[in-house]
Image 1 (cartoon, rainbow, N blue to C red):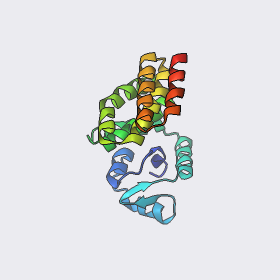
Image 2: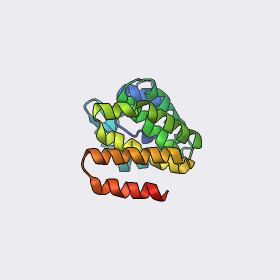
Image 3: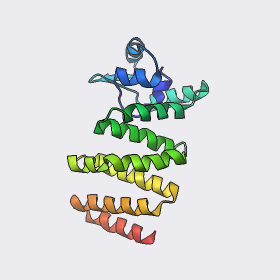
Image 4: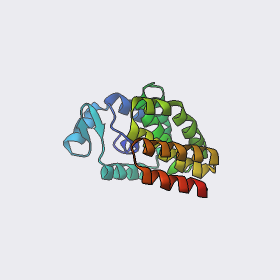
Amino acid sequence: MFRQMGVFLAPASVEDIAAITQVENPRVVLDTLVRRSLVRMREGNYALLPIVRDYAEGKLAEAGQNPQELHKRAVNYYGQKGTIESALVASEHLFELAARFQSLQAAEEFVKYVYRFYQDLVTRGYWSEARRKTEQLIVVARALGDKTTEARSLGELENMFMRVGEYERVAALHQQAQKR
């Protein structure tokens, strides 16, 4: 289970960990990992420090397990929860599949998926999350060679910086968009 937790990109509840790792009762193992300082527990959620996460994921690869399957399982699991927070986590797993594992299918799915909840982020004032998704959309659009999505995302990023008064960044993005 520890190795499988290497794919968790955000703090997760016991239920989340059980669903994705397919371990029926992970609490006993989690308590042991917390006592050994391999996993931290805050507000009922468990997470690995980045260096421990890298170690666990390395052990997952050594064991011959495919992290992509766990990321796909996480996308499906979090995608079914129906909250904006779970949509953000699912999109992080899609981005990981697209960017790190260079899955074109995940990249295309990422673009469609983010567009489904992006406006909710902006409407609810989740500015940093919306900015992160926009930056990820640009990365994925470039990987796909999708000029329309890239231009749309650059424009949205310009709008975000305009709203908060970062006009130098707006000008730089505008120049970057014109070069493309």
